[in-house]
Length: 175
Image (cartoon, rainbow, N blue to C red; front, side, top):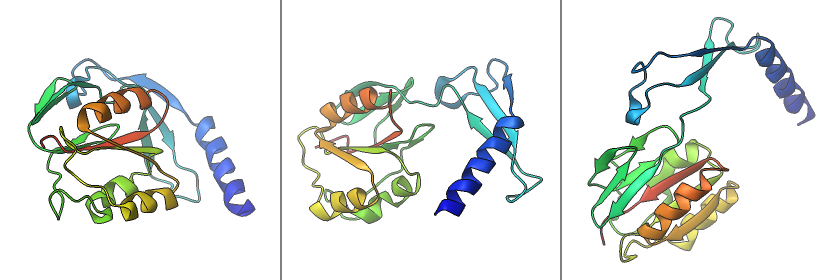
């Protein structure tokens, strides 16, 4: 463990020495209405891939839910009419659960892989979608906080929590 921490600190030190910031010109980034973004570019440490470059978006990587009503949601100016997973930098509007109104771990594999600090689950306008204890336990075992609420409440939670933590929302939009 100490070896991994030492290597991680060395990598961060190397990354910090090689940082360069620049502004991308207006309309260069069009994802969800962002019109400019600060990007951090750095060389990857030697023990990774020498020729690789890593880019991180420093600003503009949160999604704002502007409106929710039964069957539709507006996120950063774009309206969706199907269930969504909202990541810090994108929206997956093709999300569908294998068992309809029953949310299982397998329905959220990509969410878990994204390593959020918090997952907010919206169970629908009337709370019809069920989240079994096993699903919540799986998130707990990964050190991920989980909030389960009707989608209207989940929207408010998501907008508030993302100010301080990396959060992903999985929202059922109808019943």
